[in-house]
Image 1 (cartoon, rainbow, N blue to C red):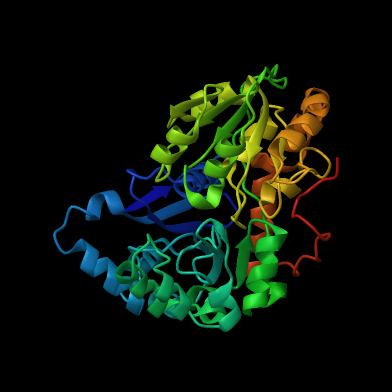
Image 2 (spheres, rainbow, N blue to C red):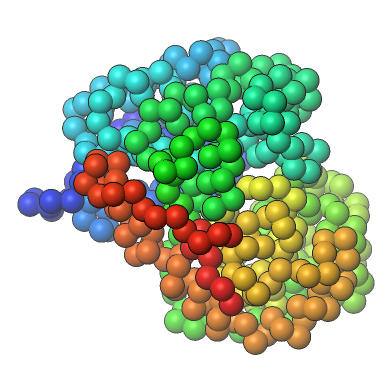
Length: 403
């Protein structure tokens, strides 16, 4: 399905087509949300846009859908957006996610400028997260082969489901990465990993996500509870966090996932489990929290949760290698280490109330819609050969200001 959002006549900005395969709504996806936000932001900036999409919700009811999707993933051949793209004649094609409903072979037949957006590590890791059993795993990347992922059943714990992804994994030779004029990474760490896989570093631009600005002009008031927001799954570190959570301190957990029962069993009376919450509910929780606890154990992309916290003026307590640990140097990393949660909480308890205004300032400086639009238009210009490649950003994190 193609959605055409045309701007006012006389617009000299680039015409941009976004290509995205939407994941099932049964599994809430921050990636889907990011694409919708970016499409809307480009439209508000006066950019003429076209969204060409495939939606799992529209396809998964078909009896042979699982087989068809597996063949598309394994072979790279399947539905493609070329007809819609050629009709629209964009200046730039911005490819987000093609898994599992679009083929990949079509990119070699597209002659215009093409930008690839890496929301995760799918081209390098069949599981998409460079993690296994809740810990960092770069075995496939290190060996230059996806065979280990098949042995471990890294996609949804199934060797059968992992097979198409293992067959299709080509690392830097991934058809989209190999064809792209520019590649967008969310963080410096992500950029380094793709460069390590063989993608030329000079073609990779670091452009973090953004979120819409909150309605309130001031940071939230804070409160007396700590907050976790996200999936309840091994790579997020939530089960270990709950098991270590000290009594006498309140932890509110918003989210659902495969470990929901285990988290519920491990929780004591000071841990409150809310289940999945809407975005408006999350923002309200953020504003009232003393701090956001981000115990992720993997090198994921830059999620929206940490940005929501900064927008609310809520400091983030995180530990490496989670990207949130580098978001704002000096504004939340648990120096005591993830194995001593109580000591990290003690360290943060006195500092966090004084950091709320600074967190909001960092959000407004680096993670707003306006900043993202300016950055991505620069990427589009470089993809079209209208501007030179950007110079290297400082070591550490992309737009990661110091505290």
